[in-house]
Amino acid sequence: DADVTQTPRNRITKTGKRIMLECSQTKGHDRMYWYRQDPGLGLRLIYYSFDVKDINKGEISDGYSVSRQAQAKFSLSLESAIPNQTALYFCATSEGHRYEQYFGPGTRLTVT
Amino acid sequence: GQQLNQSPQSMFIQEGEDVSMNCTSSSIFNTWLWYKQDPGEGPVLLIALYKAGELTSNGRLTAQFGITRKDSFLNISASIPSDVGIYFCAGQPSTTSGTYKYIFGTGTRLKVLA
Image 1 (cartoon, each protein chain N blue to C red):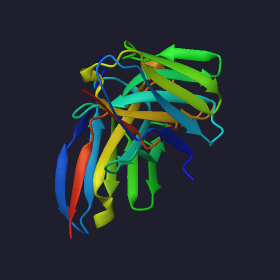
Image 2 (image 1 turned 60 degrees about the horizontal axis):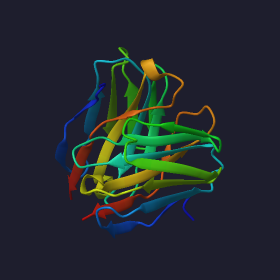
Image 3 (image 1 turned 30 degrees about the vertical axis):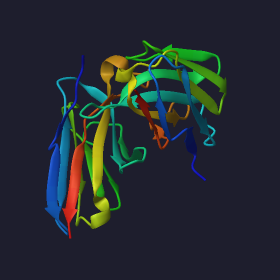
Image 4 (image 1 turned 120 degrees about the vertical axis):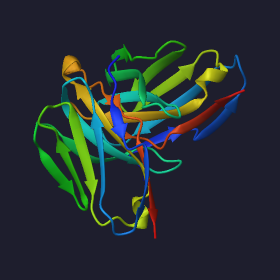
């Protein structure tokens, strides 16, 4: 079984809808991240969390919110989806003070 | 903002050839990570580098942390068809040391001709 899972893997939604992307991990890592990937651009950090009570904005947090429900679960919400939020979304995890980040399989989100 | 320049953007090579790619920046970095991403999948960590000059191998892959701390290199020896994919680097700028924030390159798309 995969260490980092994301649901759904694909989602098509309409402008203005609220949508939640979920991430779960069995790696036992305390740190979790949400990234966005667009064609021709590097991955960009949306939000990150170093533990259940710690949530931090990344470089592109506007229009997004997150919830760390447990050490193993980190969800990303789009409160009112817009077409330019169409992208690949990745969750990642890391352990303590180690620098390696491990990614989930991604969610392809299309906003029409 | 800080950027990473990754080159080449894409390359076609013959099976069995060696491949080289690199990432450069105007900023100093403390850590470099190299990933491979297959279509429809998430990035998979290949190699992590922590010190200037460090040379680390993972099978046929070898990566180096540049002496200036502004660049990193990835080499693949004796390429095989399953090496196809997008390789990208991630660097942690010294200015964000301790925050675990990375800047990601835009990737090198590798295609191997059998």
